[in-house]
Length: 507
Figure 1: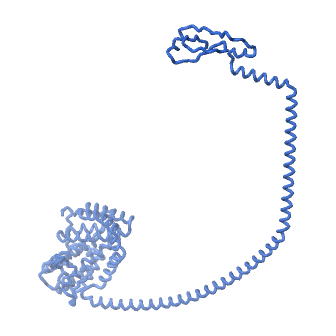
Figure 2 (figure 1 turned 120 degrees about the vertical axis):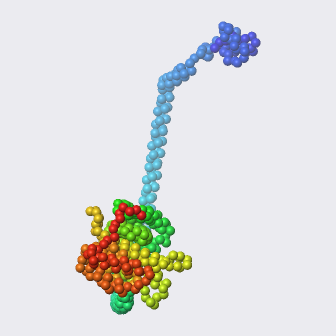
Figure 3 (figure 1 turned 90 degrees about the vertical axis):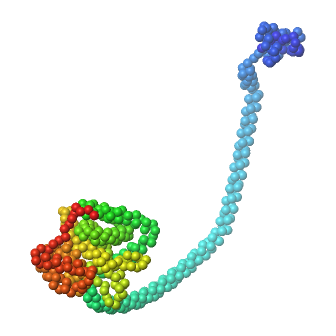
């Protein structure tokens, strides 16, 4: 914009009558707003018509559009330029056409050359291709014949091998059949020999054991043999052993909680039954191992309790009957363990004179008082423990359904009758009166009810024949007299006394 030039500024000679200044940051520039601008004129300026537009402030865009319009109008108006432009376009079009025609011509020539070359190649290689095809067909035919010959040879070879194997198999089967028959015959002879030897041994043992009782014991001992062979080796696995003993602990605790009360016995039976059946769903091996341990723990506790309180046999027998009916495998383990702990239930006395005293005591199941010193218990203590086992067995066989929900006894009074008959058929020993007396105190009345005529005859046989033949000793003096009085009272009164069941008495 036009401004007043301060006197201190340097003046130049300019041709433009309008003078412009540029902004300045000096202190003097701040004074510009206080003065009114005074236009300055150049005295030497002479106006030129061609340059008149330079003196006018003009919009740049508007000037550009004006110049373009003017140039366009001049081109349109000029006829020579249009003619030249048209001629130029025609020349370009002519050149383009010539170029295209030239390219087409070259392409046609190239194609013709390629066709000619391909035709020459086809004619050159057609003969060779036919020759190669003929040779290849001949080769295929030759290979086909070779393959057929190879297949035929393989078939013949396989057929020969198959025939050879079949002949060898038939010969082997015939030999195996012959060997099997020979082996069976040898096994049958060996079995017959062993049976004969066993019969002779049993016959020789008939004075100290019951033959039929030994056969029954053999049946139950087979259960323990199978256990030792198939289940007990699993305990070598530390993890499995730990799991089994963890399950055993609550069962032992339930057994120790048994009391001489029917409702307590029933509760502990349910708890132990459910525990054992739960283990069976997880492991058959652990189940059988726990059954064996439960039978052992139960008999050990029953012997200890019954040797102190005789009528406790009823409650332990009820537990055994309930669990044996619910789990038959438990009853088999229990009876196997019972016959092993008390050989007099077979009965077998193991008093062969050819055996040493120590061996006889081991077989009669004397227990060590001191394992290190190998000192056996006294005869009185041995008798007391064996009487406890017999009383438990008597309570078990005479046990009947006491409640409507009770199962049938799986080991009933018929087994008690067999035992009494067997022990009467073996010559009595010093321990015999105590065994019979303990048995009759609990199961004598039940025997009379089930076998009224036979039982009376057996009781008469015991009183008149067995007791007089029983060897007397200090240890059996009391049992001998008690059994005699017991039977005499029965024959005098006609009533068989029975040991009372004191259900309310606490241990």
